Length: 121
Image 1: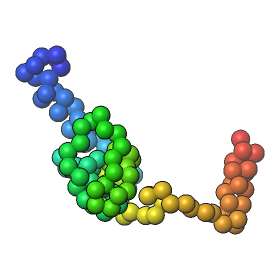
Image 2: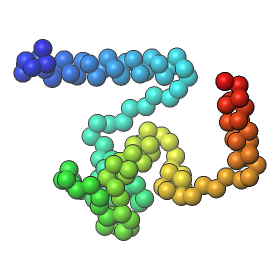
Image 3: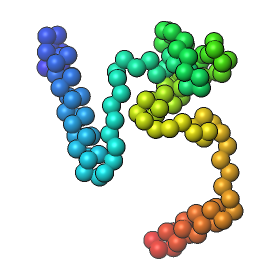
């Protein structure tokens, strides 16, 4: 039925709506947040560092440089950061590629829990 030109768009839209309804139900069941951002949000065209909207880019352009702050962006990674922000998650230094050093105490605790899981099996 999707090959039918008159019905294909309606069928596809209904399928995505049903998928979204399932996701909303699962999120509610397991106590998770489910947020929807606008389909037309220019996530790959907006600088995730300063918020400058660089304008429409051709899809063949995979990397670009912000004209305002000069930071270089991979199109997909930049869009992912902007989607997180649009969805309500706060930006962090680690979200922008910062280094996160774990302390010896945390690393040792992670190692011990891994060892316990391996021997219990």
